[in-house]
Image 1 (cartoon, helix red, strand yellow):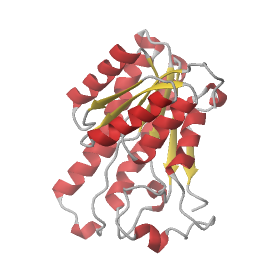
Image 2 (tube, rainbow, N blue to C red):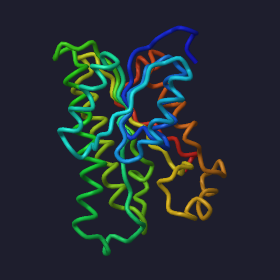
Image 3 (cartoon, rainbow, N blue to C red):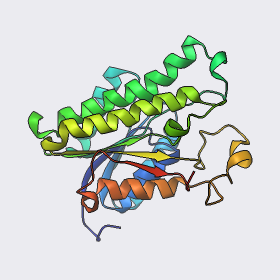
Length: 250
């Protein structure tokens, strides 16, 4: 946790109303960040996260924005900068999953939704962050943390191969972008959560496979958020281009 009164800067968390995003927003506030967060539909949950951040003595702002829409992304960044100040960390977290199914059951609508939000949206958010943080664009630098999934490596056969594929694109974004902007004051990192206790899982999924990691249990959003907070800080100043698994050994 940051020293009392220490302000690290402004962090933007996409998909910050619940799950890993909400836990990250609160953990970042505990570590000294003011926090802007985006949400798509759950305004009540977003406001609860804002209240939790403010209770910690940090400023917070929730902005309704869909990362599948370019105009929404630009409005999100501009609103956070206008209300809170220059952004120093972007947690590229927003994502969706469709009901479990085999690849031979997918249709175009399903694939377009998953890839539009998880992959294209992540690329667009990262681009918006670079345009504001890069020293080549007059910015002061910062860090981008892309939230991928252990499924990008394991493939999620019989359930979410499309989701896994969209997150594999996020892994490539992380490595490629890190090399592009390393000399422009921006670090880019990726994390791959495994089986984490969040609402993204279908009912009963964690009961069925939650004990399969070597550590014998699913992880928590707070455990993932602790890593995000470390990576966003100057304690991780020599890390960029790295992918870190948070998966209990799975």
